[in-house]
Amino acid sequence: MMPTRLAAPLAALLIALAATPPAPAAAEDARPAKELFGHVSGAADLPPNPYGFYTRGCLSGALELPADGPYHQVMRPSRNRAWGHPQLIDYLEKLTERAARATGWPGLLIGDLAQPRGGPMLTGHASHQVGLDADIWLMPAPPRKLSVAERESISAASMIGAKEEVPKGNWKVDPTIWSGGQVELIKAAASDPRVARIFVHPAIKKALCEAAGGDRGWLSRVRPWYGHHYHMHVRLNCPKGAVGCKNQDGPPAGDGCGSALDYWFSKAPYAPPKKPAKPRPPMTMASLPAACKQVLEAK
Image (cartoon, rainbow, N blue to C red; front, side, top):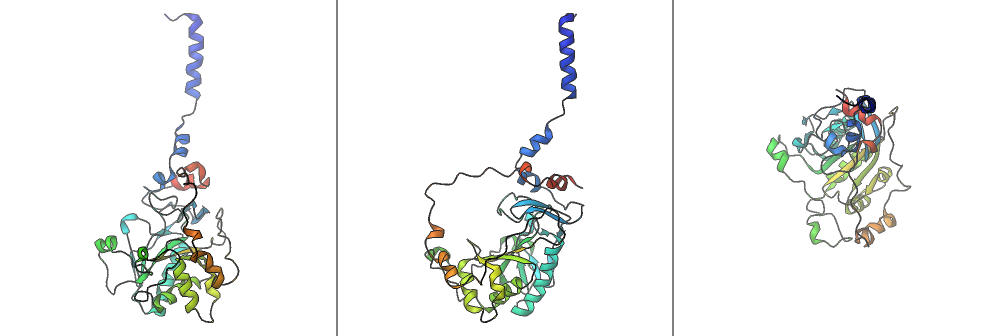
């Protein structure tokens, strides 16, 4: 028999343990968010809304861009990244038709949009988290339907050719690949008022500046950025009425041509850092907008 003087404290301890809430929520908050969002196969059955910023957020009520449309084919289908806010899907469906007329191409090849519920991805992009980003290849679709195997294996063509053979800062578009078609495609993409930014390689931005002529208003939305030599990254503004969606800052004044491009053709952007940057810890649920927990747990 347990001594009376020990029974009371032990009973109190057992009662306290029973009343202590379990800690799985805290553990989940500490898990890398990409492991949670990256394995969800379908959209959240909630009203459409992007939460957070393009590089830190999630998406409810997403729609999936059809694998095949009259003027597009979705690439890398195994990634399950053809999801976006309804406004992005509408933008792409309208753009592909408009671009086909402007370029004379059979259609466009569409790369990554977002995961079914947005959020950080298992591999690749830091952005594409709120369903308002899309990668569009800068080569025309073939005049036939690609097989699934082809969509998984075909590589996009670099618009600057063998970039490894060109010193950084001296890049130029490859005239055997680059044409007026790419100019018309990017112009059509940037002319939609819903667009916040289009990111392209600095050499592509320079080529656009040279080809634009007198109609230059759309150029301000097209910004040079590292990589992006085989695709353009389109980013839309937050939809009107979206709660908790944070917009990209407006583009700088001017068309971004001339001396505004000098930095990108100097050594500065490509110089190695004096001290190697410490790897950032993976993003967790606790670092995402609070609404993302509901998005993740929704049916």
